[in-house]
Image (cartoon, rainbow, N blue to C red; front, side, top):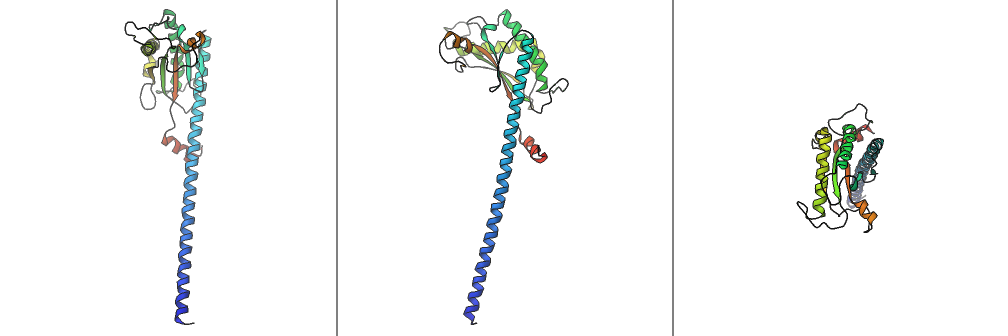
Length: 243
């Protein structure tokens, strides 16, 4: 074999070695990509499951509150999908008024006392005795005021439906804390109070239309329960423990 043949053979061997190295590197990259994909898929699945479990815990919490209130002859509506306990406004306020009626004060006091018995199982400081086993906690409870679509003419501190809804929510909040002072000290895991207030006027109806029945349903106080989302460290624990 002459020198040219030897050089050609060596060149072909070098090219073949180069392509083998490239192929090995590509296989390695694909392997790393697959591992990362599986990791993030598992993380997403774990987070989705944690959120789903928190939703189930919230639904059970709402059912417990509803059932306990029913034992005291106060019937409320719950929406487990939205996390809402609903109190019709006519049980609490006279038409167009933002001060709780005497009957309304009694009903709000009852709701507050029942919440005071149940919520320590889902907030900080945590109570274990007499509670359902759960790893989920409350993040916040919004006391929401809602009105129907009839416009307020305005009087005193009220200029429109937004004012009316906000004042009703605020007075409900204050009456609850007065009836069950311990509610003021319940916190989420970040150390923030779980009770808060919001007013929406007629902007978030639960019933469409202008019928008397639709308006009746839309005049309400909603207690909206929000559960804490799974934290990154919680997900890491679930991933490493395999649960």
